[in-house]
Length: 540
Image 1: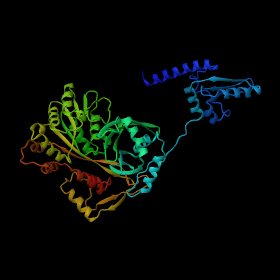
Image 2 (image 1 turned 90 degrees about the horizontal axis):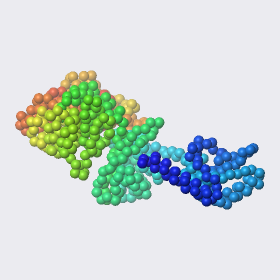
Image 3 (image 1 turned 90 degrees about the vertical axis):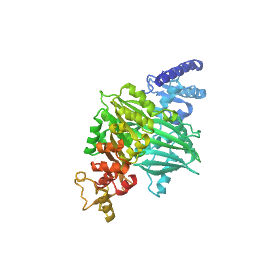
Image 4 (image 1 turned 180 degrees about the vertical axis):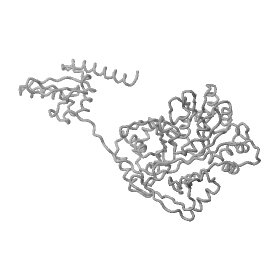
């Protein structure tokens, strides 16, 4: 029995009990279910305060041949019914009273006295040293009603475009911070009573215990309604016990399948062409590398979406599943409970998939299984922790040793970062001598083809300009991606044909083949006016 059926059954039982109660009280019973939401309300007969106080509702107003009718409940004082009956009779009017259920009474009262919509001020992100904004937001959070504080904070984080909410126990208070465009900003300080309400709600929804003395992981979803539209927010919850209490981090994933599109990642035409060419082949290994929060998952999901056609069988192994995609078989791997990607991968290969995504290669067993799968007729996508695409080869060799099969299976390694994008309010200026020297040094070994349209003689840069709409001068983030296509000379390093091969040697060979490094891609984004040198330095 679903929730709607349970509610209908509960109401039916309540109406039957009210019918029996009416016989005892000697009042006619009235079942209002067919008209309680449509019948016109009788205004100016009883005030709302009395209706609340005496559990009585006017049904029909007297006058002419009509007579007065009121609806009462078992909680309405008998003395009030007798008093009103006597008063109206003395005035020559006829008055009837009907017994209704408690649920019917609540429906009518919501129409007579609808709850007032309380609008709270939107949360604002404080700049460095801006204690006034933090105090103001803290005061707003203190005013939000108990049952709404959890949803209010998540809704505001989503409105700000925050990727994380951090709830941290300090000695005397609780600090709330949000990560917006990759930067962690203080938002508010709340007292422990608010913290207990928030964490109690989090515990219930994400299935984590606030009494645990071990780190925990949980998951929840929340529908966000804004401007007439609705989207689903996936929230990954991580808690850890600290000196002063349970700290929590909520990672927010805005689930919108239409946004998982390679064309929306902000990549250049050449970058898109390289990715599409590699994934058009029926087999091979594609690795995405970068730190946490660099957008690896979004890029991998966008590639999956591009491959998601009716003639392909696609299976993913994830810990946890961050986005649900229609038409793809997604399998959760609970590594904290003893599950492993390697074991899961061996199992799904028996299902004859065309494309497999492994959430992350963390150990030699998973790496070897993924490599084996990629040379036996499967396209395998995965993420891997390394600082750059060249470093990924060195790390993989450290993990599994020199492996000739790896050299023939790996086709593309992508390293990615997200940098904050300058808002349209940005201001142009000439580069300083030191900045110009640095830019020319970074781009010194880039091919002229890659530098087409770039003026290195008169270098212009842009600075962020703070506005009310963009308090830090930035508006969202953009992708900086390094793509290493595995050529014959790169394979020679992986096979061990070159003695003592290292990251620098692999990168030099890749650059000779036309690859631009993350730093070079970042500097070119600066010259296009998309971001700043400081931002590239911070991220890359």
